[in-house]
Length: 164
Image (cartoon, rainbow, N blue to C red):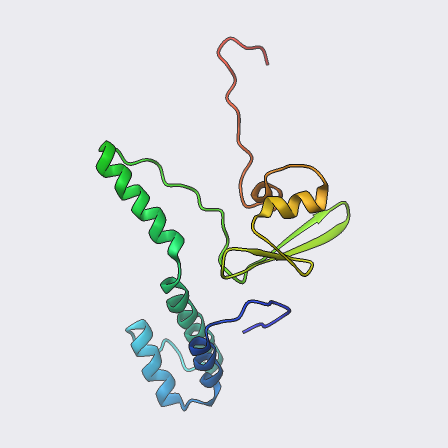
């Protein structure tokens, strides 16, 4: 686990479980692997097993708290019931909590940390949107997700009969 300078903290249960992995006897590592993955351990490389188990524990914990996915699915189900048609899936550009977004603008590196409550931290301040941070950096109004490379630019369709 790489703590770096990330202000985001893991839930205590996950952090304590991961911290205990190096102290567990190999028999308990094997049992934990079997419980989490449903298979026998693929090899006896302890470092590999600990890292995979730590990753799986984090996945399990953070899936519990992904309310955006649940809300998105509920909206799609409601639209399907109302219209009888399923719209294309919304592209959710929001990164998972703990992610660090890095953008170099005018030879200056800017780092933004995604927090668990959906806000963003930039240079010691909290922001509710990436667009507000982009405005702080550039002084202009752009799409924050576009500025940080989370969304692709929209391609406009040429009008019929228009010159190119």
